[in-house]
Image (cartoon, rainbow, N blue to C red):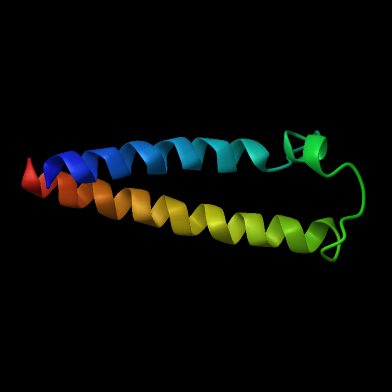
Length: 73
């Protein structure tokens, strides 16, 4: 069980790093590389909002998994 949760923690950490880097800051960030202008999905504001929501969900899953791992180890 510990190995499975540790592997999930590793995957969540890698996904969280990628999601944070995709956010556009003052510059365009990595998200500007994939979406230079308007998107076919309703513009950059909607895409940025969905990216923020996904980042929060992954961060909460990361934190909960870390707490569970802390109690198990």
